[in-house]
Amino acid sequence: MTTTGIYIRVSTAGQNEAGQRAEIERWLANHGIKDVRWFVDKKSGESLKRPAFEKLQAAIFAGEIKTVVVWKLDRLSRSLQDGINTLIDWCKAGVRVVSVTQQLDFAGVTGQLVASVLFAIAQMETETRRERQAAGIRVAKQAGKYTGRKPGSTKADPSRALALRAKGNTIDEISKALDVGRATVYRLLKL
Image (cartoon, rainbow, N blue to C red):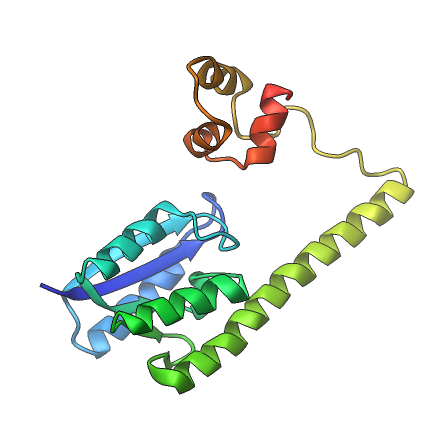
């Protein structure tokens, strides 16, 4: 039996998905859709390596999901290439993708064209945010007000990283277990 997949993503564990959920629930009610599966990630959209996203992908390619509903298209990806490739793969699998706040259905070539513009904007926003952050850090450093991240501000425990490494886990496995990036794992292990 096929169902509608609802995908929600917030960038960090500290963020709340309630706003996205409420908008999507209202859209579902207005369209009489009741048979849904929720997929929620609390990770950056810069990579497709997100647990709920990977489960959604598996369900799509197993034929269990024929419609994906998102709050906004950039919830799928903040990368132009990843977003377009995902959307094209889904369309080839006969999946309809709907963004409730943008009031767009991305089926067909026209939908893919509009999606490519939206993914490009999402990627541009990410790059602009990074540039602003880097500029702010440069100014703060010049003024002597920036000393970098405070010791101990990482959310991962160095002793746990060391223990996982001692058990023979790879950097990628440790990264996934601690829910941090590879660079953080290297820092924790002081490699």
